[in-house]
Image (cartoon, rainbow, N blue to C red; front, side, top):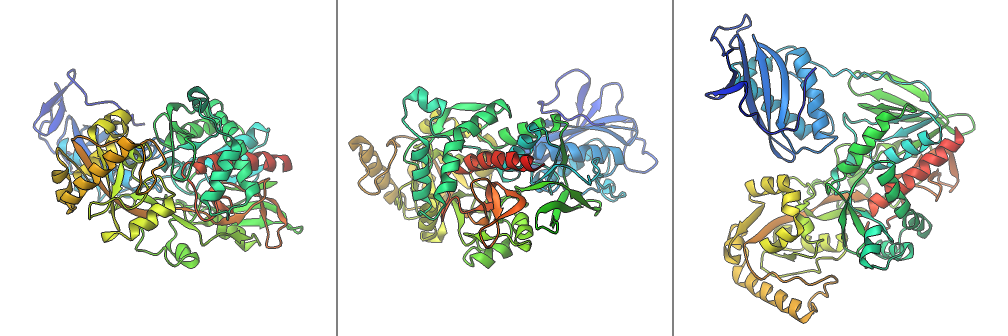
Length: 604
């Protein structure tokens, strides 16, 4: 077994640096080659680094007589429950099989590649030849979970909605199989900021902010151009507060004592996980699932087909393990589809909305390929709103990743400008409005301006230090003492930018934005250092999916409920209309996830 630790570099004691290699004091390498010719005999340690999704991290290896004893992660900021879980799996696989010939873990490809790169460097530093280790026999991960053949409830997809459904059904006393096709759990929920629109929450009460489910429902319907189902929206709005408390007490999720106001919301109501990441939720919900005897969590296993009986009721799921190829059918009384949207399925995007082609990157998990939608459609489920695909406005122009440093905008501390140095839209407008406005600007890009004072007050650059360091290294974000110096790398008109900032600061003094009617507190940008960040829209959310009713039952083309089939989360459509307001996804997935889980359990 290997030990993984999120500790800093080793200090003092038994390790002493010898050139690029860390050798155990008293057991320095003798220089004698081992029988395989892969490095020095004796005991040695080495350190290597890799650039993961959240910046550079370092690993240490310990080698004795050419055998890798252990791998230790020294400092990593990879996503909890995803990147670190992938490194844990790879570490055991590499050590147990003494090879670097391993595949990446699905769902954490970037972290996996960075980890194997770091281990290779560390092996070289310890006197080994990583090139030889990469040529050894390939090691395949073998799942320790056998595919089940029967249960009460099957839940497909281990993101937020799937966790909520599985835990709820288990708490009703039912046995549950929770399936995840990727090698790690969390899906798009783990990749999100985790912010959750909750009317009447405890922070609003403390700050004297009046809000209600009716207020949230109104904002959601207006934000979706009144194309969403009012009944489904009302369920989300009325269930959000209870769902947030469920996350606190059932899931163990902690929250910041702060609120955010997303575009399209008339009231500041969105609560924030303590780590400002959805992984705060999914890592703790994974832990909760693993504590429950009623739930069997099966990863690396894809649902391939829904099984119906003669009456038309769904009574099982066909599945296939992605590693071994093993196939099985699990019989059940009810199925909950929580497999997410189709933002990462290019062909499916183009089928329903040709404008969402390969020119647009995606923020979504590679697992968001619409599997649940396809399976349900084959047994007669009605699809709705499939053409409505949302882009998030503030994304990495090179990778498509959602930029959390960009939350300076949502903290009312930044303005958006174009290459000409001008503001061109109200910064807190709806996501679709912002995205469409950005697409019309020079190079299809926009730039966010804020200063050190506001960055310090929000703490966002510290909270997302990993992202900031990565962006700064690639010049996606620039810090400078003057506006001219900040504008120069991007070719922005500095003279016009200065005029824009002066005009903005005057708006702040006057208390009114006469250009775009900014809806939140006006905060001036009066002195440097300044930050400028470039960004462009990327596919973020698919509003369309399976047509459901307020009980989370999937409806057929005639509008009747398909017996035994439920859906929750992004896989289910007609809730958000043409556009989803920020932070409403979390309210949706945990509210409808719990409804689906409870109603599925009632059939078992």
